[in-house]
Structures are given as structure tokens and as C-alpha cells.
Image 1 (cartoon, rainbow, N blue to C red):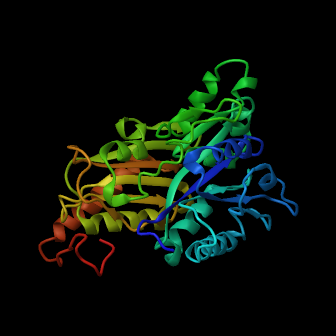
Image 2: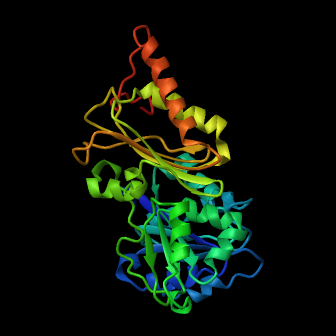
Image 3: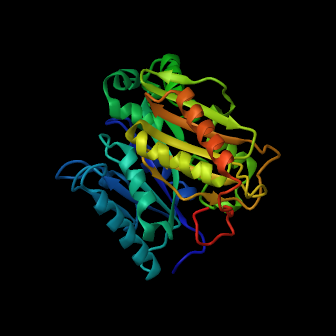
Length: 352
């Protein structure tokens, strides 16, 4: 059977040994994930992690043909299509999909696969990205492994694990994580246990019905910061605009970012006041050079009408982002008298 609402696909990532599988095993025993299908990606010829996740049905699938961030991306999309076909045929029942990545996986290509398959886009939506960080070895891992920094930087929520072994509150690690990704709340797992309620909540799972607190939680604390947060080459900052932005200016802005920033734009998410559609804001989301088509809200979720865009970047100065947006906005305003009008979400023939 099919569903009127897209199925959220959440990604659980984290470096090798950070406790992903233990966390997932506890989560799947909670009622919130009792109807979740699980895809576990293991790097190597023999997969073991899926055998450590206790389920009484066949909704746990192991992908052992390689790391999902490499050649196996096609395997991921094929597996998702197969799951949906089995659901439609009544062979499986689930309303949520969780992907546990290999500890060596760069999460960005996995998010790309979820965002770029046109057929999947009609049935599933990207949920939360949850990253586990080992409270004992986390600092050393972040210092040594670039992929671990990316895993933390793109997360919507970060879970500290192995706190019982850390010998105290890991204050320095928390500060390091906050420097990488101030937008993501940092949660605690006690011996692998954490409350599933809210952990995988996705503000965009039903984008037309989200409320103010959901958008605020999705954008995170970075939207309230006027200064950038840095960790080595990775920076997180928010760009806020009071004046509405023309649809064509936003389109050109995103296209320029995709073309010129590529892999250094780790993640972008935001809510934008579009001049041609003042009553219905656009929600935007991008990972590197791939952007979702905007999701149009039915109404503003709060009295705040400012455009708020949260950037997590590598070696891209905030001042360059702001100058680019201002320059494109000024150019569009200068030619608006002779340009064709750009319609809002009622224009069925356009992403806008």
C-alpha cells in the first residue's frame, strides 16, 4: 500500500567504534521505532552488525558490498526501491527507514542519493542525520580523521556515547563539537540507551504542516548566533535577511553555490521569505552541490518573517557568502523592471 505522506529516511552515522549499532539496538526496542525498516551498511565481505540488532521480522537489511559513500550508492537506492515495493505489496509494514552507515562513510554522498533520485523523492524524504561521538576517544578521532569531522558537522543531532567510561563530563569534547556544529543539540546515551522520542524527528517529513518549534529545532542554535563558529577549516554560521528575497535571486544564489563551492559546502538549510510569495515561506536544504527543490509551507510558522540560512562550510568565508547574496539581489533588483515576473508556488511549471 502507498502513503499520502513521504516516509522519513533517517541516517545514523559516526566513526568506527562510536557505538552506532549498540545505540540502534536499544532504539529499535522502543515503540517509536517499532515500525522502522533498517538498512545496515558494513564495510567488508562479512557483515556482523545486522546480527547484533534483534528484530523478529525481516525489516533489517545488511549491505556488505562496500561503503555506501562509494560505489554502493546505487545499491542503496535499489534497496530503498525494493523495500517500498515490498511495502506496497503488503509483505512489509513500516513508516520510517533508518540507515546505519559504515564508520568510514562520508555521509554527504548518502544524502545525495536520497535527494537526487526522482522516483524516491515521490515516496521518501530525508529525516534527521544523527551522529554518534565516542566520549572517550572522540577528541583524538576528531583531530585525526577528517571524515569524523564531516560526520559531526552535517548532523542534526549528536549523541555522546560511552559516557560511563569517560571518567567525568567531557567538557572539552563538547566544546569541540559545538565549534564544529553549534546548530545540533548534543544528547547523551547512557550505556547505549537514549529516548527515541524526538531523536529521529524530522521537521521536513511533512513540510506543509511544520510548526515554529520544529523549524527552530531543525535550523538549530546557529540561527541565533551573529558570529561564526570555527573548528580548523570548518565553520558554521547563519545568514539572516530582513528584506524578502526574489525567487530568481535565490535560484541564482543556490546555483552559484553549487557550481563554485561544491564539496566545501557541507550543508545548508534555511527558511526564506520569497518576495513573490510573502505568505508562504520556502524551506531550502542542500548538501554540497545537491539541493532539494524548495518545500513550500502553508503559512509562516511564527511571527518571525526573516530569512534564516544556516551554513556549514569548509574554507568558505561568511563575508563571501553574504557579498554573493547581496550582489545577486542587487543585480536582480536592477533588471526587475524588464524581467518577466517570477511566480510563486502556484506556478506548477517551476520549482518555485
